[in-house]
Image 1 (tube, rainbow, N blue to C red):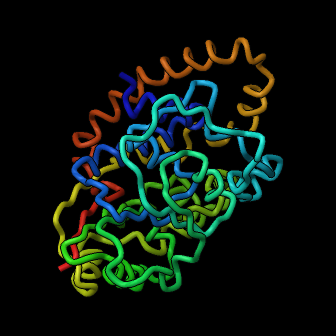
Image 2 (image 1 turned 180 degrees about the vertical axis):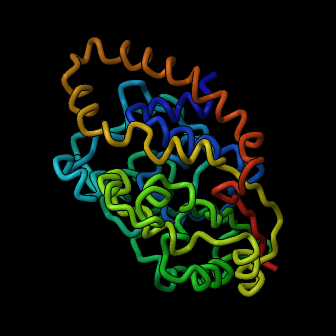
Length: 310
């Protein structure tokens, strides 16, 4: 049986550092169950939640089929904010459950999420505003985008409002160490050393966003209490080793790797892709298995919280 890691590497094969991160997210949230009615806040293209639900894609599909602006990749353009109507995911295993509503602010990503057969309805909106759902509508909510929002405390109050009594939300939230593990931060920003300014092309604006809401556990937990949410479960994950690998990974090579992959004849691509994935897995899976051990030297970069409405 294909594991979640196999499935993630299949779709993120040109960005394996993303597959490693997402695999550790899935392991951290293992005890969380989507109970209907359910909501995915910041669903993006839906691929993460689809794979977590047991859904699987053909090896002919990956997350890079619908992109635009790759020529401006180093100008901080979101190349994934595109939806090619000619590209359709080939689903080989249907998800084992469905999520009632997918919510995101980007129409292109929602359109891609809508192709997966995972979501009952798609809703576009801004997470920085009041959520467009009635009080106590949902029994379960998942989100890994609260730290991108301007006011996470307001978002937590909104989650409390739309949850039913006893309902649960699974939230992925960064710790204060997340931006500290950044090469760009350590070598260029903090010391003010201009000779490392070229790393700005690797950072692509991520540090400024991540610094805003990368908080100690005590700060997140105070926000939960203020919003009327009780902590039912917590798991810290993403060791320094994993984040340092993710911070660069194959990121700087991605545009040229994508061009190379596009140039490979379709008859040969599947075989090359599987060899590529098998090679990566030999190195990345042991690192995933050792994440807790590797995290002993510093506070892990992320937290998985399951919180419950009181």
